[in-house]
Image 1 (cartoon, helix red, strand yellow):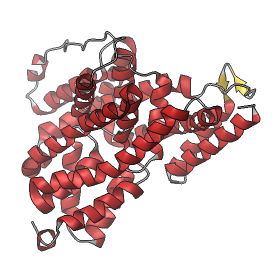
Image 2 (tube, helix red, strand yellow; image 1 turned 135 degrees about the vertical axis):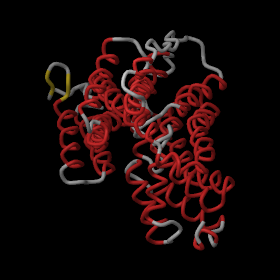
Image 3 (cartoon, one colour; image 1 turned 90 degrees about the horizontal axis):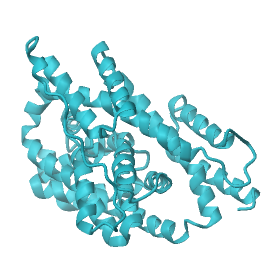
Length: 392
Protein backbone atom coordinates (compact mmCIF):
# COMPACT_ATOMS: atom_id res chain seq x y z
CA UNK A 1 0.00 0.00 0.00
CA UNK A 2 1.54 3.36 -1.02
CA UNK A 3 1.45 6.54 1.10
CA UNK A 4 -1.46 7.98 -0.88
CA UNK A 5 -3.54 4.88 -0.16
CA UNK A 6 -2.76 5.07 3.57
CA UNK A 7 -4.09 8.64 3.70
CA UNK A 8 -7.45 7.73 2.12
CA UNK A 9 -10.39 7.59 4.54
CA UNK A 10 -13.96 6.33 4.18
CA UNK A 11 -15.27 9.83 3.48
CA UNK A 12 -12.91 9.98 0.47
CA UNK A 13 -14.21 6.63 -0.77
CA UNK A 14 -17.82 7.74 -0.29
CA UNK A 15 -17.34 11.03 -2.15
CA UNK A 16 -15.78 9.30 -5.15
CA UNK A 17 -17.92 6.19 -5.53
CA UNK A 18 -21.28 7.78 -4.66
CA UNK A 19 -20.61 10.45 -7.28
CA UNK A 20 -19.49 7.91 -9.87
CA UNK A 21 -22.64 5.88 -9.27
CA UNK A 22 -24.87 8.78 -10.34
CA UNK A 23 -22.78 10.17 -13.22
CA UNK A 24 -21.11 7.06 -14.65
CA UNK A 25 -23.06 6.61 -17.88
CA UNK A 26 -21.85 4.61 -20.87
CA UNK A 27 -21.32 1.07 -19.56
CA UNK A 28 -18.40 -0.85 -18.02
CA UNK A 29 -15.69 0.50 -20.34
CA UNK A 30 -16.71 4.07 -19.55
CA UNK A 31 -16.80 3.29 -15.81
CA UNK A 32 -13.27 1.87 -15.88
CA UNK A 33 -11.99 4.82 -17.91
CA UNK A 34 -13.60 7.26 -15.46
CA UNK A 35 -12.03 5.30 -12.59
CA UNK A 36 -8.57 5.62 -14.17
CA UNK A 37 -9.02 9.37 -14.48
CA UNK A 38 -10.25 9.81 -10.90
CA UNK A 39 -8.22 7.19 -9.03
CA UNK A 40 -4.90 7.28 -10.89
CA UNK A 41 -4.59 10.68 -12.52
CA UNK A 42 -6.51 13.01 -10.20
CA UNK A 43 -6.08 11.41 -6.75
CA UNK A 44 -2.95 9.28 -7.17
CA UNK A 45 -4.36 6.49 -5.01
CA UNK A 46 -2.87 3.87 -7.37
CA UNK A 47 -0.25 3.85 -10.09
CA UNK A 48 -1.32 3.13 -13.66
CA UNK A 49 0.33 -0.31 -13.49
CA UNK A 50 -1.50 -1.14 -10.26
CA UNK A 51 -4.81 -0.09 -11.81
CA UNK A 52 -4.15 -2.18 -14.94
CA UNK A 53 -3.39 -5.22 -12.78
CA UNK A 54 -6.74 -4.75 -11.03
CA UNK A 55 -8.52 -4.61 -14.38
CA UNK A 56 -6.75 -7.79 -15.52
CA UNK A 57 -7.66 -9.60 -12.28
CA UNK A 58 -11.30 -8.55 -12.65
CA UNK A 59 -11.36 -10.03 -16.14
CA UNK A 60 -10.18 -13.39 -14.81
CA UNK A 61 -13.15 -13.87 -12.49
CA UNK A 62 -16.90 -13.86 -13.20
CA UNK A 63 -19.01 -10.87 -12.32
CA UNK A 64 -19.45 -7.22 -13.39
CA UNK A 65 -15.96 -6.04 -14.31
CA UNK A 66 -16.32 -2.32 -13.58
CA UNK A 67 -17.97 -2.97 -10.20
CA UNK A 68 -15.22 -5.45 -9.32
CA UNK A 69 -12.58 -2.85 -10.22
CA UNK A 70 -14.17 -0.39 -7.77
CA UNK A 71 -14.38 -3.09 -5.07
CA UNK A 72 -10.70 -3.89 -5.70
CA UNK A 73 -9.80 -0.22 -5.24
CA UNK A 74 -11.68 -0.14 -1.95
CA UNK A 75 -9.79 -3.27 -0.88
CA UNK A 76 -6.44 -1.65 -1.72
CA UNK A 77 -7.36 1.44 0.29
CA UNK A 78 -9.01 -0.08 3.40
CA UNK A 79 -8.92 -3.87 3.19
CA UNK A 80 -12.10 -5.95 3.34
CA UNK A 81 -14.23 -3.21 5.00
CA UNK A 82 -13.08 -0.82 2.27
CA UNK A 83 -13.99 -3.31 -0.44
CA UNK A 84 -17.53 -3.69 0.91
CA UNK A 85 -17.92 0.06 1.50
CA UNK A 86 -16.67 1.10 -1.96
CA UNK A 87 -18.82 -1.50 -3.71
CA UNK A 88 -21.97 -0.48 -1.85
CA UNK A 89 -21.33 3.21 -2.58
CA UNK A 90 -20.93 2.42 -6.29
CA UNK A 91 -24.02 0.20 -6.48
CA UNK A 92 -26.62 1.70 -4.12
CA UNK A 93 -27.44 5.07 -5.77
CA UNK A 94 -27.71 3.41 -9.19
CA UNK A 95 -29.94 0.73 -7.65
CA UNK A 96 -32.28 3.35 -6.19
CA UNK A 97 -32.48 5.31 -9.46
CA UNK A 98 -33.16 2.13 -11.43
CA UNK A 99 -35.75 0.95 -8.90
CA UNK A 100 -37.60 4.27 -9.21
CA UNK A 101 -37.76 3.86 -12.99
CA UNK A 102 -38.87 0.24 -12.56
CA UNK A 103 -41.81 1.41 -10.42
CA UNK A 104 -42.77 3.91 -13.13
CA UNK A 105 -42.42 1.25 -15.81
CA UNK A 106 -44.70 -1.22 -14.06
CA UNK A 107 -47.18 1.51 -13.16
CA UNK A 108 -47.29 3.28 -16.52
CA UNK A 109 -45.57 0.95 -18.97
CA UNK A 110 -48.87 0.16 -20.66
CA UNK A 111 -49.43 3.78 -21.67
CA UNK A 112 -48.96 4.15 -25.45
CA UNK A 113 -46.46 7.01 -25.03
CA UNK A 114 -44.28 4.99 -22.64
CA UNK A 115 -44.50 1.91 -24.86
CA UNK A 116 -43.48 4.00 -27.85
CA UNK A 117 -40.46 5.47 -26.02
CA UNK A 118 -39.29 2.03 -24.91
CA UNK A 119 -39.83 0.75 -28.46
CA UNK A 120 -37.47 3.47 -29.71
CA UNK A 121 -34.85 2.55 -27.12
CA UNK A 122 -34.96 -1.20 -27.81
CA UNK A 123 -33.39 -1.01 -31.26
CA UNK A 124 -30.65 1.16 -29.76
CA UNK A 125 -30.02 -1.51 -27.12
CA UNK A 126 -29.58 -4.15 -29.85
CA UNK A 127 -26.94 -1.94 -31.48
CA UNK A 128 -25.18 -1.28 -28.16
CA UNK A 129 -24.93 -5.00 -27.44
CA UNK A 130 -23.56 -5.60 -30.94
CA UNK A 131 -20.94 -2.91 -30.34
CA UNK A 132 -19.94 -4.67 -27.12
CA UNK A 133 -19.49 -7.90 -29.11
CA UNK A 134 -17.54 -6.06 -31.81
CA UNK A 135 -15.14 -4.59 -29.25
CA UNK A 136 -14.54 -7.99 -27.70
CA UNK A 137 -13.71 -9.61 -31.04
CA UNK A 138 -10.02 -8.58 -31.34
CA UNK A 139 -9.11 -10.00 -27.93
CA UNK A 140 -11.48 -12.97 -28.06
CA UNK A 141 -10.65 -14.35 -31.52
CA UNK A 142 -6.91 -13.74 -31.69
CA UNK A 143 -5.83 -17.15 -33.00
CA UNK A 144 -7.11 -19.85 -35.35
CA UNK A 145 -7.80 -22.17 -32.44
CA UNK A 146 -9.94 -19.54 -30.70
CA UNK A 147 -11.82 -18.87 -33.94
CA UNK A 148 -12.48 -22.61 -34.16
CA UNK A 149 -13.79 -22.67 -30.59
CA UNK A 150 -16.03 -19.70 -31.44
CA UNK A 151 -17.54 -21.60 -34.37
CA UNK A 152 -18.07 -24.69 -32.21
CA UNK A 153 -19.71 -22.53 -29.51
CA UNK A 154 -22.02 -20.93 -32.04
CA UNK A 155 -23.09 -24.33 -33.40
CA UNK A 156 -23.69 -25.73 -29.92
CA UNK A 157 -25.80 -22.74 -28.90
CA UNK A 158 -27.88 -22.79 -32.07
CA UNK A 159 -28.29 -26.54 -32.59
CA UNK A 160 -28.49 -27.88 -29.02
CA UNK A 161 -30.26 -27.04 -25.76
CA UNK A 162 -27.04 -26.70 -23.78
CA UNK A 163 -27.15 -23.68 -21.44
CA UNK A 164 -24.77 -20.86 -22.30
CA UNK A 165 -22.84 -21.31 -19.05
CA UNK A 166 -22.07 -24.94 -19.89
CA UNK A 167 -20.75 -23.95 -23.32
CA UNK A 168 -18.73 -21.06 -21.90
CA UNK A 169 -17.10 -23.03 -19.10
CA UNK A 170 -16.57 -25.98 -21.44
CA UNK A 171 -14.75 -23.83 -23.99
CA UNK A 172 -12.70 -22.23 -21.22
CA UNK A 173 -11.64 -25.57 -19.76
CA UNK A 174 -10.91 -27.05 -23.19
CA UNK A 175 -8.71 -24.17 -24.31
CA UNK A 176 -6.90 -24.00 -20.97
CA UNK A 177 -6.08 -27.71 -21.17
CA UNK A 178 -5.00 -27.46 -24.80
CA UNK A 179 -2.65 -24.61 -23.93
CA UNK A 180 -1.20 -25.93 -20.69
CA UNK A 181 -1.15 -29.74 -20.80
CA UNK A 182 1.35 -31.85 -22.78
CA UNK A 183 0.28 -32.97 -26.22
CA UNK A 184 -2.35 -35.67 -26.02
CA UNK A 185 -3.11 -35.15 -22.35
CA UNK A 186 -5.88 -32.70 -23.20
CA UNK A 187 -7.80 -35.61 -24.73
CA UNK A 188 -8.66 -36.63 -21.17
CA UNK A 189 -11.20 -33.81 -21.07
CA UNK A 190 -14.56 -35.39 -20.37
CA UNK A 191 -17.42 -34.30 -22.62
CA UNK A 192 -21.09 -34.17 -21.77
CA UNK A 193 -21.30 -31.63 -18.98
CA UNK A 194 -24.66 -31.95 -17.23
CA UNK A 195 -27.37 -29.70 -18.60
CA UNK A 196 -29.35 -27.57 -16.23
CA UNK A 197 -33.05 -28.13 -15.67
CA UNK A 198 -35.01 -26.41 -18.43
CA UNK A 199 -38.54 -26.77 -17.15
CA UNK A 200 -40.30 -23.47 -16.53
CA UNK A 201 -42.69 -22.75 -13.72
CA UNK A 202 -46.16 -21.26 -13.58
CA UNK A 203 -46.00 -20.66 -9.81
CA UNK A 204 -44.97 -17.23 -8.50
CA UNK A 205 -41.34 -17.62 -7.48
CA UNK A 206 -40.32 -17.22 -3.85
CA UNK A 207 -37.81 -14.58 -2.82
CA UNK A 208 -35.34 -17.37 -2.07
CA UNK A 209 -35.77 -18.74 -5.62
CA UNK A 210 -35.23 -15.28 -7.10
CA UNK A 211 -32.15 -14.71 -4.95
CA UNK A 212 -30.71 -18.11 -5.89
CA UNK A 213 -31.19 -17.61 -9.64
CA UNK A 214 -29.55 -14.19 -9.65
CA UNK A 215 -26.79 -15.40 -7.32
CA UNK A 216 -26.09 -18.22 -9.77
CA UNK A 217 -26.03 -15.83 -12.72
CA UNK A 218 -23.69 -13.46 -10.88
CA UNK A 219 -21.38 -16.37 -10.10
CA UNK A 220 -20.92 -17.42 -13.74
CA UNK A 221 -21.15 -14.08 -15.54
CA UNK A 222 -17.94 -13.88 -17.56
CA UNK A 223 -17.25 -11.17 -20.10
CA UNK A 224 -18.88 -7.81 -20.67
CA UNK A 225 -21.79 -6.72 -18.52
CA UNK A 226 -23.94 -6.98 -21.62
CA UNK A 227 -23.56 -10.77 -21.49
CA UNK A 228 -26.10 -10.48 -18.66
CA UNK A 229 -28.77 -10.16 -21.35
CA UNK A 230 -27.86 -13.61 -22.65
CA UNK A 231 -28.14 -15.19 -19.21
CA UNK A 232 -31.43 -13.47 -18.43
CA UNK A 233 -32.94 -14.49 -21.76
CA UNK A 234 -31.91 -18.11 -21.29
CA UNK A 235 -32.62 -18.55 -17.59
CA UNK A 236 -35.31 -16.06 -16.59
CA UNK A 237 -37.26 -15.85 -19.87
CA UNK A 238 -36.82 -19.21 -21.63
CA UNK A 239 -36.24 -21.65 -18.77
CA UNK A 240 -38.31 -20.20 -15.94
CA UNK A 241 -40.79 -18.02 -17.80
CA UNK A 242 -40.79 -15.36 -15.07
CA UNK A 243 -40.82 -12.50 -17.61
CA UNK A 244 -41.19 -12.12 -21.37
CA UNK A 245 -38.57 -11.11 -23.95
CA UNK A 246 -40.44 -7.82 -24.28
CA UNK A 247 -40.10 -7.15 -20.56
CA UNK A 248 -36.43 -8.14 -20.69
CA UNK A 249 -35.76 -5.61 -23.44
CA UNK A 250 -37.57 -2.94 -21.45
CA UNK A 251 -35.53 -3.84 -18.35
CA UNK A 252 -32.28 -3.62 -20.34
CA UNK A 253 -33.40 -0.26 -21.74
CA UNK A 254 -34.04 1.10 -18.25
CA UNK A 255 -30.77 -0.34 -16.92
CA UNK A 256 -28.85 1.21 -19.81
CA UNK A 257 -30.61 4.55 -19.47
CA UNK A 258 -29.54 4.88 -15.82
CA UNK A 259 -26.00 5.52 -14.52
CA UNK A 260 -23.86 3.05 -12.62
CA UNK A 261 -23.41 -0.69 -13.18
CA UNK A 262 -25.24 -2.26 -16.14
CA UNK A 263 -26.18 -5.14 -13.84
CA UNK A 264 -28.81 -2.94 -12.17
CA UNK A 265 -30.93 -4.35 -15.00
CA UNK A 266 -31.46 -7.15 -12.47
CA UNK A 267 -33.23 -4.61 -10.25
CA UNK A 268 -35.83 -3.97 -12.94
CA UNK A 269 -36.27 -7.67 -13.69
CA UNK A 270 -36.68 -8.42 -9.99
CA UNK A 271 -39.28 -5.68 -9.58
CA UNK A 272 -41.28 -6.95 -12.57
CA UNK A 273 -41.24 -10.46 -11.07
CA UNK A 274 -42.19 -9.60 -7.50
CA UNK A 275 -42.10 -5.92 -6.57
CA UNK A 276 -39.63 -4.15 -4.28
CA UNK A 277 -38.64 -7.22 -2.19
CA UNK A 278 -37.80 -9.17 -5.35
CA UNK A 279 -35.88 -6.19 -6.75
CA UNK A 280 -33.77 -6.08 -3.60
CA UNK A 281 -32.98 -9.80 -3.49
CA UNK A 282 -32.29 -9.96 -7.25
CA UNK A 283 -29.83 -7.07 -6.96
CA UNK A 284 -28.21 -8.54 -3.85
CA UNK A 285 -27.93 -11.95 -5.49
CA UNK A 286 -26.30 -10.78 -8.70
CA UNK A 287 -23.75 -8.50 -7.01
CA UNK A 288 -22.86 -10.67 -4.00
CA UNK A 289 -20.43 -12.95 -5.93
CA UNK A 290 -18.45 -9.89 -7.06
CA UNK A 291 -17.73 -8.91 -3.44
CA UNK A 292 -16.83 -12.44 -2.41
CA UNK A 293 -14.63 -13.15 -5.42
CA UNK A 294 -12.73 -9.87 -5.18
CA UNK A 295 -12.11 -10.26 -1.44
CA UNK A 296 -10.93 -13.86 -1.94
CA UNK A 297 -8.76 -13.25 -5.00
CA UNK A 298 -7.31 -9.81 -4.21
CA UNK A 299 -4.42 -11.24 -2.13
CA UNK A 300 -3.68 -13.67 -4.96
CA UNK A 301 -3.69 -11.00 -7.66
CA UNK A 302 0.01 -11.20 -8.60
CA UNK A 303 -0.17 -14.99 -9.08
CA UNK A 304 -3.47 -14.87 -10.97
CA UNK A 305 -2.05 -12.21 -13.28
CA UNK A 306 0.82 -14.50 -14.26
CA UNK A 307 -1.19 -17.74 -14.48
CA UNK A 308 -0.98 -19.28 -17.93
CA UNK A 309 -3.86 -21.66 -17.20
CA UNK A 310 -6.34 -19.01 -16.04
CA UNK A 311 -5.40 -16.62 -18.82
CA UNK A 312 -6.08 -19.40 -21.33
CA UNK A 313 -9.31 -20.32 -19.53
CA UNK A 314 -10.56 -16.75 -19.91
CA UNK A 315 -9.62 -16.74 -23.61
CA UNK A 316 -11.66 -19.90 -24.15
CA UNK A 317 -14.65 -18.52 -22.23
CA UNK A 318 -14.57 -15.31 -24.26
CA UNK A 319 -15.02 -17.18 -27.55
CA UNK A 320 -18.28 -18.63 -26.23
CA UNK A 321 -19.24 -15.23 -24.81
CA UNK A 322 -19.12 -13.70 -28.28
CA UNK A 323 -21.18 -16.55 -29.70
CA UNK A 324 -23.76 -16.24 -26.90
CA UNK A 325 -24.10 -12.50 -27.42
CA UNK A 326 -24.75 -12.96 -31.14
CA UNK A 327 -27.33 -15.70 -30.61
CA UNK A 328 -29.15 -13.65 -27.99
CA UNK A 329 -29.15 -10.53 -30.15
CA UNK A 330 -30.74 -12.53 -32.97
CA UNK A 331 -33.52 -13.67 -30.62
CA UNK A 332 -34.17 -10.23 -29.14
CA UNK A 333 -34.02 -8.45 -32.51
CA UNK A 334 -37.28 -10.11 -33.57
CA UNK A 335 -38.95 -8.24 -30.72
CA UNK A 336 -36.97 -5.00 -30.86
CA UNK A 337 -37.48 -4.41 -34.59
CA UNK A 338 -41.21 -5.07 -34.63
CA UNK A 339 -43.50 -2.32 -35.93
CA UNK A 340 -45.55 -0.03 -33.73
CA UNK A 341 -49.32 0.00 -34.35
CA UNK A 342 -49.94 2.33 -37.29
CA UNK A 343 -46.31 2.29 -38.46
CA UNK A 344 -46.51 1.78 -42.22
CA UNK A 345 -42.77 2.10 -42.85
CA UNK A 346 -42.06 -1.59 -42.58
CA UNK A 347 -41.02 -4.66 -44.52
CA UNK A 348 -41.91 -8.25 -43.62
CA UNK A 349 -43.26 -7.05 -40.28
CA UNK A 350 -40.05 -5.26 -39.27
CA UNK A 351 -39.90 -1.51 -38.81
CA UNK A 352 -37.47 0.24 -41.15
CA UNK A 353 -37.30 3.09 -38.65
CA UNK A 354 -36.15 0.73 -35.90
CA UNK A 355 -33.60 -0.84 -38.23
CA UNK A 356 -32.35 2.61 -39.23
CA UNK A 357 -31.98 3.63 -35.57
CA UNK A 358 -29.86 0.53 -34.92
CA UNK A 359 -27.63 1.14 -37.95
CA UNK A 360 -27.15 4.83 -37.10
CA UNK A 361 -26.26 3.88 -33.54
CA UNK A 362 -23.69 1.31 -34.72
CA UNK A 363 -22.05 3.87 -37.00
CA UNK A 364 -22.15 6.64 -34.40
CA UNK A 365 -20.57 4.57 -31.63
CA UNK A 366 -18.00 2.65 -33.69
CA UNK A 367 -17.02 5.25 -36.30
CA UNK A 368 -17.47 8.51 -34.41
CA UNK A 369 -17.05 7.22 -30.82
CA UNK A 370 -20.19 8.98 -29.61
CA UNK A 371 -21.63 8.20 -26.18
CA UNK A 372 -24.33 5.53 -26.26
CA UNK A 373 -26.53 7.61 -23.96
CA UNK A 374 -27.05 10.13 -26.79
CA UNK A 375 -28.63 7.45 -28.95
CA UNK A 376 -30.80 6.16 -26.13
CA UNK A 377 -32.27 9.65 -25.70
CA UNK A 378 -32.70 10.00 -29.48
CA UNK A 379 -34.36 6.57 -29.68
CA UNK A 380 -36.81 7.48 -26.91
CA UNK A 381 -37.64 10.77 -28.67
CA UNK A 382 -38.14 9.08 -32.05
CA UNK A 383 -40.35 6.43 -30.48
CA UNK A 384 -42.46 9.07 -28.70
CA UNK A 385 -42.88 11.14 -31.87
CA UNK A 386 -43.79 8.08 -33.93
CA UNK A 387 -46.21 6.90 -31.25
CA UNK A 388 -47.98 10.26 -31.24
CA UNK A 389 -48.01 10.44 -35.05
CA UNK A 390 -49.58 7.00 -35.38
CA UNK A 391 -52.28 7.70 -32.85
CA UNK A 392 -50.49 6.38 -29.66
